Image (cartoon, rainbow, N blue to C red):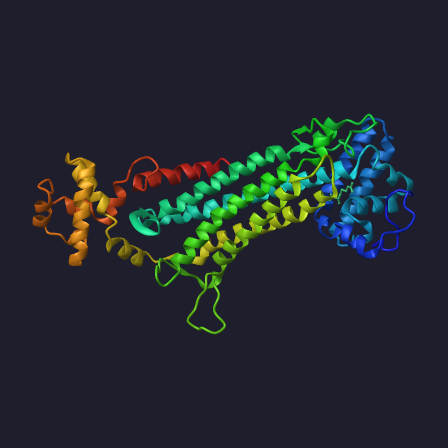
Length: 465
Ligand code: ARG
């Protein structure tokens, strides 16, 4: 059903056909074919409205809707392959409709322009994608929560400046990413609000002479409201910028987690083992197991940032209203959607079945450093020594212990009491990694009780979705 031989669709004003290379350059059909079902749905709403308002007869309206439905089926069954000469998906569908219906097909475009049409299609597409991405974020959160539940009492070194700082519940660490994903969903929900506005009926730029009903088409298509200004309606792409901004932040979060997994999987950290289902080997070094999944996620993050940047630059110099530059919004959006979906899926699988935390190794890691030094200072502070004074004192202990090749737990009670008479034998319990973590029970802290409450709160948020 290719229409290669047919001339272009625009008016008789043109005397000759486009140069073939220019036709290819101008065409968007190769990528905007992805909008076909939204284009059909949008056109069905438009045709229904044309009949409802008496602009065309109801018989014509029904024929248009049925003809459009036939094209949908042809596409789904793999029979609809518009060529470059169709220019874009809007012309392709309209042309096929006219093939099917004859003269009636030519009435579809009454009171409409491709400018408001493409804006409508893109918004319908993005609405669905926002839902799908949110679903994937929810699955990702679910997998992290399951893992967190298994590792409430598994301890992991916590870092600042990538230096050992204080030990953490591993669950607490994982829950930080659940929170990020929560904000990501919220942000997408916000983008949705500004995507869910109908530009249909804005015409080319100024509205139309026909007595159309924009509210009716908006209602048929499930839009929350309509653009109040036709110029703004056809030329606004804020929603696309916002979407790419929200997806860029999703990628920031996935990329940070990826970086951690890559570090954790290294010989130097050794905190996780990657399973065979989610890692690859080297073609030359037989001992290697590479963290390709998080590396790719980290790498693909730049692509999504690039699309955001491209979209911002695309918009900054555009005079009102529609300009062909806007055709460039689609590949940025499509690739942004595809990339973020693929990365979310891969990271969900990685955390579901692709890695295992090396619990004994983690336990050893938190036991062999000075990450309990703050707790010694806190211990003295609770015994009435001003915190800054106890902090300085512990600094000295760390220095002398380091020089002696000892850890804080190795100091004798006499040594502690020489440092300060307030030390008693309960200092040993206070500085075990487990107690160090358990004691951080302030709201939002890593204390086990806090972590259990945080898991329960996250679970109930997920269940009301
Ligand atoms: N393919 C075009 C796009 O993606 C559709 C709108 C064309 N409008 C126009 N006035 N040439 O933006």
